[in-house]
Length: 87
Image 1 (cartoon, rainbow, N blue to C red):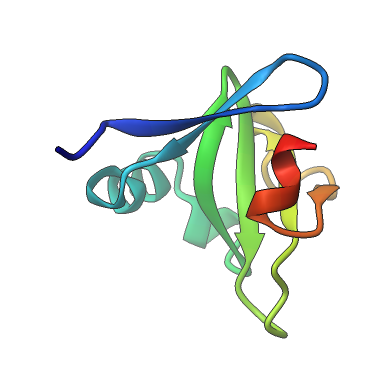
Image 2: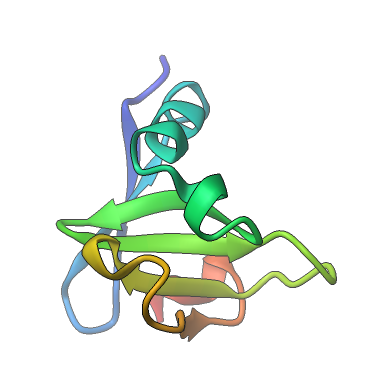
C-alpha cells in the first residue's frame, strides 16, 4: 500500500515527512522550487522547513531551508544522505 508520506524521526525527536513519489512533483510546482532554486529538488517537509536534494555533482546530501526564505538564504546542510537524516 502506498503511503502519502514517509516519516523519519530525527535524532532530536523532530519528524521529517518525505513525500511519496506521487506527490513530490506537485510539491515542487506548488512552491516554484525549480524557478527559485533550480539546483535543488524538494523531497520533504517539517512544517515550513523544506528538505532538499542538490541536483548536481552526484551530491547525496540533504539540505533544508524555510520555504518562505527560498531564493534569499543559503541552504543548510542537514545530513550526508537520506539515511543519515535520522541520526
